[in-house]
Length: 109
Image (tube, rainbow, N blue to C red; front, side):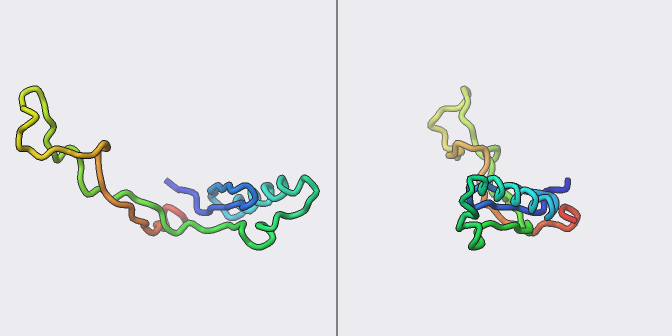
């Protein structure tokens, strides 16, 4: 699956979007700037001083699971709550950490 390659940020309204091409990102950002200047007051200072941007996505977040609820005991009717088995202490099914992995070229040609 090919994912978006670019992200554009408009500081005027603190909005961003992702795009497959640089040209699409630029077109969206230009339209955001045009909408923001329709009041006749000119460009916003944040736009004038470089706070709007288009960036190429080079890394994406990835959840690296380190442990899972299925590895732990779950109390049932046949077992007493006082059994010695280790139970899962979290409200979610897995724990882990977030890594940022480089985007593979085949995902973002």
